[in-house]
Image (cartoon, rainbow, N blue to C red):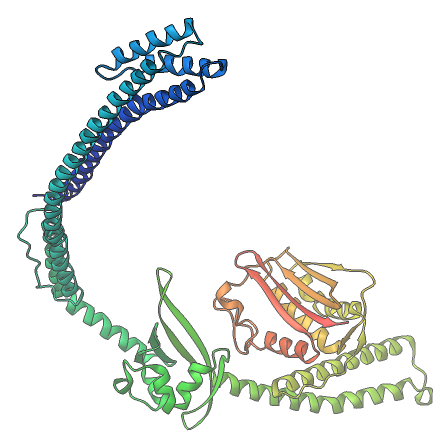
Length: 560
């Protein structure tokens, strides 16, 4: 029998029980109601009329109101004759009452009237007793049959309650156990059901699936193992430290570089809970705790080394299934940067002496004691003076940059008009913009307040923004400089319409040594990091908004 038929049978039986009890109850109650209604309407009302006529009779003669009241109840009684003999008694009562009406002061037939009323009462009282007995018999009969049917249905329902759930639970239990075995990769297990219903069809389908899985497992196991081995080999050959964990922070793998840095063997900690490993390992603890610290200093290769930490979340259909910590060795960049910083500082310092000598010589040439200069010579002296001043400023900027990179920033914060910073920056990049035929559009609000800033360092930041914007803007393009006042601060904004930055790189754009993959590598990735340090050292904040394929907006705020 099919499962649907079994369910239909069980539910149909329950429906039948409800239907039978409902019909019997309605029929029994209806019969009792009819019997009670007969007593009430046919007999009880007659007794009421008779009692009213007896009361009116006591007030006769001489009372017209009582006479009319008697007449009214007699008419009602004449319309309510239901029992055998009641009609004769009523007609006798009407005859005596008509005689009384002809001679109202003659009370000789009062006795006959009273006897007729009593006869009507007696007939109806006997009828009430008889009908009451009939109603009682009906009630007893209903109770008897309802009790018998209730007992039978109770036994059947109890039997169904004990046996019917097994029809569902037994095959479901067998299916659940079979599916658990398959989930544990016991593909040789089979579900056996004896009944011929939908559960049997489902069991056969699951058995077929298990057979296919067994076949697939055996045919692809070697290939999967080979691919796993190849991936492990690739990871171990990488020069970056790689640590893989599942969604619950249990360690899945380490490559050879990570083993050296952690001082642990992969086979010793595979499957362990990473925070438990971190209790005994300082580097693991730093990797788990310093979520926001992207650059780490680690003693590796017998020296202090620098690593850029990147945490990559691994998802499958928007569900987190693990994460990978990548430690990229950026020590060579640090070493190159330190060498560059030392070189810049040395060269800048050494250039100051000859530049100062040149300026001193110019002053001597301008002094009339050494002789008068003709017009051409004066122009040459002015040109040399401008170039020497420009060289002196450049060497000063180089020294400032070396201060940033060594962490010794020296600021000269003074009230400064934003327009001066803007003009200085535009003049510095004018030639670069003209070479690519790029239009520099300025939107500066009027009456801007002065900002508390180091003019040269702030201009350096704006120049850096503009240089990057020009670099990534196509020829004949446009770069917009916007300066506005916002909430007591002044915002310097540079907008380009180049390729933009992917959202996954936005949070790293101001990190040292970071360069967006796929962009032109023109430096070591320090420009924006230095800009950030300059702005924050002056109490400001620096930001970037970008949409890939549309363009980027770099901006910073300074206190006014």
